[in-house]
Image (cartoon, rainbow, N blue to C red):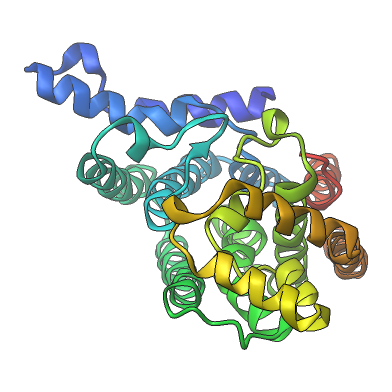
Length: 329
């Protein structure tokens, strides 16, 4: 973890209750639940991008609290997402709802959501920062609705464009667009319009690479369950690409598997589909698509950052954005 990431994590954890200070054992357990995902670490990519963008604009005095609040958003959303997807793992450990009864995990996510807004208020966040947070929460929720509804409704009539719209809402906005905009707003500046357009492209590329790593990456390094997207029935770009060209019998076999709830899926069938996706070239094509989206977006952002006063921070922010896409875990 970088020094900046540690500073953001310290700020985040300082906003949460301490188990040792709890007046009764149940509330000590509650405090431990709130601190569980934040204490698991992570790279704090989004929070770091907020601070570095503010520094690039020349004023990071208000950025740390905003960055910590964004990482709190990430943590409460992940708790809810893991419940909704029935996920097994998060950051190399069991998902929170696998450690405690699901209602307790859900309640912990709700509490972190409330703490996010309190942290912003205590940091004296400007009105535009608060409105940007509302936008990212609403946008992410609409994308999550698309993702969940396709699985719940057994939808297989989807296209790559459907996937791209879902990812722009669910992942791309809060991964790249919001951190860039929040960094500028925390510094008292108006965000460059390219932060939205190029940020969406980069955020989508990030999610495509995440889908690739779910099938190709080392689970120990990736921090999530190998082939978890198949266990959860996710309609990824990789899956839609493969389904479009699959032989009718193989497509029917895959759809039958993906319609089943997680507990009823045969591990051998999941392994078969996993192998077919990789052998078909769909995974490699997805990674190439991510590259084609990311390169021009990074070039646009490099031009936007070139005019800012804090060039050392600007370069670090650009390197961080590139690392979102060119990562191997």
